[in-house]
Amino acid sequence: MTRHVAEVRLQDRTARGRLLPRRDPYWRAIGEGRHVGYVKGARKGSWMARVRLDDKYLKERIGDVDDVHDADGKRTLSWDQAVEAATAWIKQQLEGTPKQEAAEPLATIPTVGEAVSSYVAMRDARQIARAGKSVKSDAHRLKRNVEGQPIAEVGLDALSEAQLFGWRSTLGYTPSGRQRVVNDFKAALNQAFLTYRKVLPADFHNTVKFGLRAPGDATEEHSGTGVRDNQIRTDEEVRLIVKTGFAIDDTGDLGRLVILLAATGARFSQIRRMLVRDVQPAHRRVLVPSSRKGKKRTASYARVQVGADVIAALQPVIADRPADAPLLEHWRHVQIKATTWERDYRGPWEAAAEMTRPWKKLIAESGLPETIIPYALRHSSIVRGIREGLPIRLVAALHDTSVVMIERHYARWITEGLDELAARAVVPMLEIAA
Image (cartoon, rainbow, N blue to C red; front, top):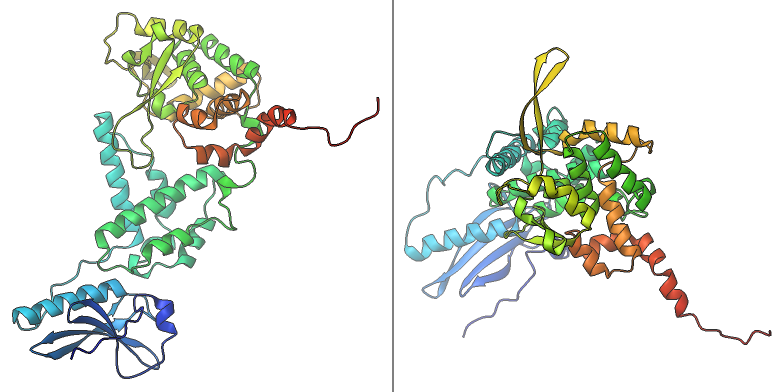
C-alpha cells in the first residue's frame, strides 16, 4: 500500500518558519515518487532530494536553506534552486549515471555596476539601431549616478533593500527626474535577473521593487496633484509661446516644432519621428506615432485633429517633399571660429536637448516665467481636453497614455471640470420661501 506524504508549503519562507525543528525531513512532492525535503535544525535548515527506485527511496542532501543567509545558488539555495538541483539529481539516479565529481561551474554573478554597464550598452545599441548612427542613450544618466557609489561594488546576489534605499536617497533632481533614474535602475536590475535568475535569490524582484520604492505609501510623482500648477498654462499663454517660437526663428523650424507639441500634446520623442505622410490636410488631422514606452511591440498612431492654422504652418515642409521624409528638420551648424558658427546642413530633430537653448530664449522673449518647460505644452493639452468635457478614455488615447495615469496625475482638474455637471444633479431638499 502506497504511503501518502503530508504536503507542507516549503516554498514559503514564512510557512517554514512555523515548522518545528526535527531530524526527519518535511517533504513536498515535485513529481510521482519525487520529493524535495526540508530538514529544520536549531540554527539552519537543509534541502534534501528523494526519488523512489525499486520500491525504495534514495535520498541526498543538496544544500543549505536560505532561511538565515540569502541564496547564492551554490551552497545556499532558495526553493526554486532546490527544486532545480533536486530535479537534476533525480534525473541522474533514474538514468543510472553516477554523481558528478565536479559540477559545472555556475556563471559568475556580476556586481550592480556591471549590470548597469550592460544595460547602458543595450540601450545605446538600441538607440543606434533606431537613429542609424552612433548616438548615446539617456541611460548614461543612470550610469553617472551609480559609478563611484558603494552600491556599484555590491554583487547582485548580496543586494539588499537597505542598500537600494540608501542609494535612492542620494539622488538629486526634481521628483520626476529622480523617478526616471530610478525606473532605469529597476530596468537594469530586472534585465540582469533574467540572465542570472538561476543563481540569484528567488525574491530578487521584491528586493528591487521595495528597495527602490519612494518613502511613504505613495510614490513622489503620484503624491498631491501630480503636476505642478505652474506647468498648466492658459490657452492665451500657449498661443503666446507658439507665436514667439515663430518670431525668434526666421526659418520657422522652432515654431513648427512648438505648434505641433502644443496642438497634439505629444512628447518630443513622438513628434520628432513624424513623417511628411503623417500630415493629412484634407482631414485636418495628423498621425502621431505611439511612444516607445513599456513593452509595445507593434507601431501604432494616435489620430489627432488639429486646426487649419496648424496645417497652414506645416504646409512649407510638406509641399513637394517625399512622403517618407522626416516632417520636422532644423539647421545643423558648424563652428568656424571660437565664437562663430555657420549653417551646415538641415537634418531631423534628434534629442530633446537640441531644444533647450531655443526654448530658454523663447520663454525669455515671451515674458512668461522661466520655470516653464516644453512638457508644459503636453500638460496643458491634457487639462484642456479634461476641461472641455472629453471622456477621460479619449483624452488618454489622444495623448498616448492610460486612463489610470490621467486619473492619477490630473485628478484635481478632472473634478474641477466636472463641477458644472455635478451642479446640475443638485436638487432642492427643502422649499425656500420666496
